[in-house]
Image 1: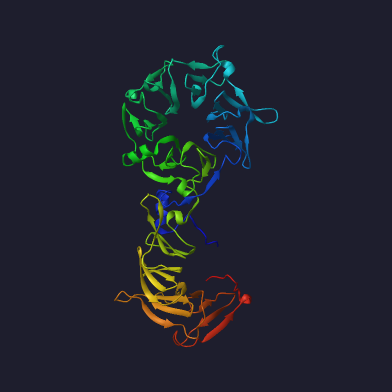
Image 2: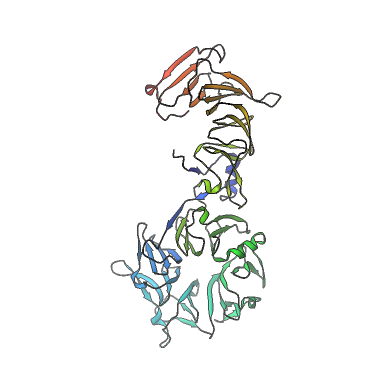
Length: 515
């Protein structure tokens, strides 16, 4: 396999499997990310919003206009270019509602199937059809709401008219949350659309009269999540605001939460302007952070949406990313502390260990909260092998055999260039060590706690790259090229073998065979 980078597929092994079942993000590495540089495609770098329609086409609101992606290429929907599109919404009937700088409406295919914008401006009263830029779209049972700074427009899906709200002030955002419609009225505060068809300040909403609210979202378990530059992310319940995730409150405030969506697994994806995407559990626990350091195209997130495969699309100030979260596979490399070319892996005491060209590494929870790797102290050379035994974990490297305990390696047998380790199937306390001068033998620790050296296999002095011993005592060794030996010992391992059979291509030996 390619050893430039290790792909650690979902490991269903021992304690790791149970942790993954409880929290699929607990041991997440680098997720599979597809990045799109919209600037290189000839469009603006900024991407504000997106949806996927029933046919699988992806639409993204870009500063250049509305982009369509068919799985192969990106194109500009001509009716809306070159005007910034900040708002997209897939309504309950599967129609794509669009809000741009100069118009708003719904996409409909023409006779050739090409999407065209059906403008809703003609439904406005005469003399009121000059619409300012649309910033947000929301939907309730009443219909679809389009928000501009000077007005809010409700379309019920018919072809007759629009309902218009104008109160002489400015509307700063519009959000559907828990069945209600919310906005921030500039200079007045956070308001909800009432049954009487008017916007009313919610209890305590005056606190946001002059604060920039970026998003209002339904909170897990009830209430609202309200994000602002000044106060971070708060939960609103029964007229009171309180930090949603107290342990993360300052970090979320500094990150500047700009967008929130609920994923299919119930977790929350938070798009931030400074720290990429944060995933939080319904209880406010930080699950993972996806930012530039682990593959996100840019840390300034402007929009989030998911597709039918639960892929998370991230519109940013400098391109688009699609993330597989939690993903069926993730990878680890130097960005998560795993350095060098990986030669072997082993799971021991609930931790994953790697032997690489730079040493031994053990999985750990890093100081930044991510699951990654840390170096095992005591070895600083090329490492080739790992073996879990009932007596502990052994590692083989260019300097010999080491016993690994946690993040410390202690020499067991030095001055050997070790390439492989194997447990005997005929003698459970015996370990075979393949190295440049043959095969050495180790016995499990005795009462002193030390591994015991038992010499080398007799009649063998070549460089061995692989070894195994079957239940009947037969030993097979592999050399560097397409050759090996089958050995049997009758009077102890130090004596010459009682059986010696050369193995070549006719017996299944290949240039890259591995025992």
